[in-house]
Length: 305
Image (cartoon, rainbow, N blue to C red):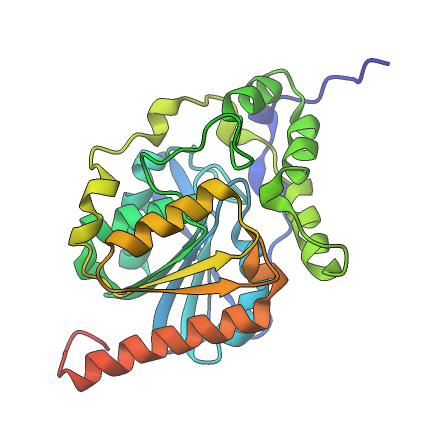
């Protein structure tokens, strides 16, 4: 049986597709204007600022299990990256460092803890290497390191070209189905709330980032792998024990080369350790950030406000 063609993602008014987050518990929502459109940004809590950057093809809601803990001690900022969620700026990784700059300027934030998961980790690592003075610390969850892509045979391979062809053919439903079956999305059945949240996020994914997909939009002029030894930002690596082999190799590269780095391994998790083991994840992130802030104050730094 032939399935009917879905509307082109270009016809979708993206901000109408995702219900606004609940503004309870002091959450503050805003739009930040960037090149090509707007980014949806949400803030909660007070204290040392931490910015959470989601991976592909998710949105800010993937950090929902972190907010109720982290915003007790930190000023937590989440966002929908360009091309995802409620943001209407077109997808382009080459512009996302400037996007973070724009968010920090809009919110009057000086130096922040920056946490990036998966593709968001790729962006966070680029930011740390080119703008280290803007960071208190760097936290990488299953981050992709530029220049270390998996082979097609690897379980961590993401067939973006194939997904883009499906999106352009109006088959976003197939992309959603295939991505939910990908090893990076594996969540055991007992973690019902984690699976429910991912299902909710993916049900609103419209494929807008893949309509005009081009590998050139992932390009970065700096050889990240070669620059890792120069990274002087305190770094925490968050790795699921059941992560794909390619992302474990990325983690090992970071551990080998980055000077000020430590790793936490989540024994019961794969790629989505923040959803599968949120209590331990939140505790380790909180401890790390507080240690960094305390050490900076003890050393007499005047840059931490």
